[in-house]
Length: 195
Length: 396
Image (tube, rainbow over all chains, first blue to last red):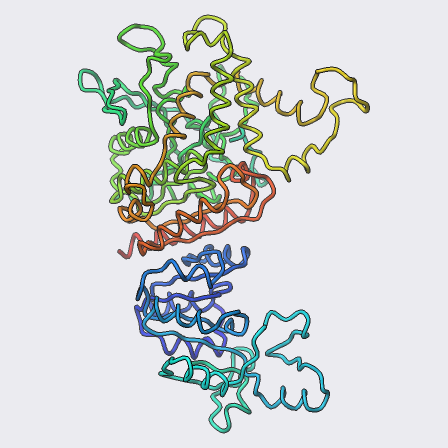
């Protein structure tokens, strides 16, 4: 079994054993597979890409092919303990509606995203005057799926305004499957935020 | 569905298989049908591959489509010591040692549907009361009747829980019927390229196919046994079917406007385009092995099938509330007979009931027939799903 990516490890550590999980944009199912084996969760995933869905089902995970914004609608209220949206929020057209749906179908939601307030991004923009391209956000302005750019502070403000209560947060700096928590000036030094 | 598929590239096969028969519902009781009629005795032809384990928990039931049979995999024993050049069973690419449905792990059963002519009781079988073929005196049957007959076979084999029921097209309808009718027997289910009810489009094609049979003077109101058969009508019915099994894209790629064995138009009514020649070939091949009355009955059963009406007072959500199985639903992007939206309807109803469902739309250009063609994606989906269903069955 491949070691879990650092940001996913943090998310996994927040999940109670045996919980019912819905992951939006679950990719090839790394997180769900780990949670199923290690924490005996009841897993459901939604993924749009056919090849990734095949991979998930091949691994024995319950995954649906479809658009997360539409597919989440069919689930009954409180069908899950956690709805997780890992590194996908920045690609969502209507994030507040999606989070509202997550909190309808689950007791708690977990979201993570690359921090646009990171120092590398700030300095790149300041120094070159061009849209920043980093390891975490590796696309050019014209081909990026990341249509929302937000920092950790942006999300906190947004959550406050939208009425989402932040129960837990982690600011992290990652390198492959390794990483560390960022405690000093997280909005400047963290590459990812998890809420 | 198409006749047969190619053999597995690695040559793995279950080997020699044998068609078996099970007879039940002897008169006077008979089998009660959905239409209110009774039928008996009923014979079901079936074949098995692999070995049933001691606690009988590894049974997989494969359900065939409209014109299929119990011969899902392997070969029949060559007769009189003659070398056999016969084609393998219709899903040999999926069922066998190390294949998607692995016969080293699972005991796989496939039975010929009630109303067919491949060994099970149907309109072409002899009515013991008259000593003649039933023909159109055969009672109308439904998908539910087919499933009830399969349930009798499971009871006969001593199987109380089926690890997975798997089938495509009309076979997929039987899968859905199984899950709703016998929820405690079905651990998991794989409805492939199927629907909870025919669209008007699907009914329309079936009706044209039936009309072509009934318009053949040889059909003779179904009474043609021992006489000239309605071959022309049945062949045309099959040609219509084949159009619905392909797609605009697959026809474009397969035939385009290519001519058959000629380079210029001949300005006459023979088969000139390759697509014409293909359809005629399929039609002619079909009449050698299929009975026209059976075609009428089975297409009608498929048209009648309506899970929502039958079990949910027109609500699919209500119908699926009766299910307990874990599902893998698969559709094909170019299937215009049972398009993806119809699979999504069932997935939505399953989700609303909190059922464990996986869904994948396989991107394929080959239309409805794609589920019978070699595709590693489907193999992998089914392998993983069965493994997970077997695991769940142990831990529950």
